[in-house]
Image (cartoon, rainbow, N blue to C red; front, side, top):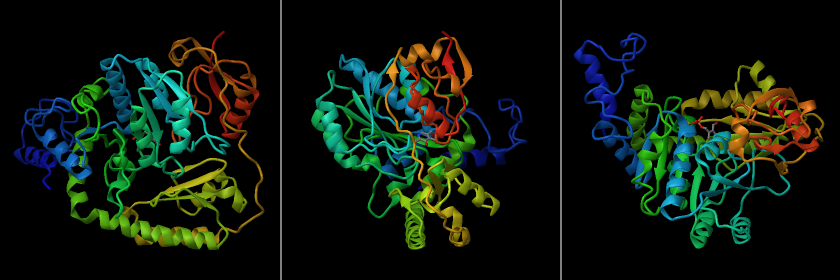
Length: 443
Ligand SMILES: Cc1ncc(COP(=O)(O)O)c(C=O)c1O
């Protein structure tokens, strides 16, 4: 597979052209950092090398269209929601999205900005805000009992702790009910390259976003918006238009050329490397279980430990690993999440296993998250986002209306939803996750 973007930049560097264009470092910071000069094409108005490179990616992922994001899945989520809104307009429907409650905060803010009404699908017996199990049966019930049929269903799969949803079953329900299926696949670009392809587009989603940078050898910020060959008319044709509503007009060519080079890498046996790594991880998980660890999630490139069962809060356990020179992806009171790719290599894996097996098991910590329940929605999310707000200590928050998601990344999953009037339980939840300062509407 060719690499038209990378090759163009290489030739430009070799040509020693005088750079009287942005960026201001003129190549001194990094010669590969160019902008949309003549011949470099224009992202979302492609008629040259970017178009060719995106078509390469589309071939690899088996899509009707794949467009690049130089702003991660955050931009991809905004693009998907804009497409959902366009689709609703075209069909004379009010834009409504039924979404799993564990959606990334960009989903909430972008829905509000686009005037999309969100109907949350709450998990039963959730033990964390990070997960919201949605089965095909549960979704069917939800859709059948909805007063107004949503335009789309929005699922986060894999979730942050490595659970993948039954996208095949869920997509069948969506087709039965005549609603679109959009998947936040930020953590799952690599699922395409397993021996059994588990990518959401293969399994029936109409569209999904992937953070290529999270699991493939791509620079931070590199992502894809994929549209399925089975998606209704109009989605592919409007993909660029939807992305350009939100995207920077100065996309990073370091990121774009990294995505371009990844196409070649992915075609040259990278899938085998992913499979080998997945097998290694599976063997490590088995030994960890045999040694008293409790694990969760079914994602092959993640190791998620339920650390309380081993006697530690996740955040404390992450501290132990840090002291041993291991920095993990995410921890909260319940979990420690480690993300591994073939780039880690055998040495990293051997060392990780050695350190994990050297941590002594202690008495189980029996403390549970207070639970994720809907609070009364006092306003629309959109109204809440723009009202005057103030920062207060969470101890004073009961009865106040939440103004902004008040969570950082990772995992960027809202503990309560903007515009909700916070209950005693919501306050307990914020504290459980170590969030003590929150934004509420000034009343
Ligand atoms: C589930 C999920 N969706 C979306 C995002 C946003 O992705 P990005 O950082 O690529 O913009 C993240 C980031 O952590 C995420 O975990």
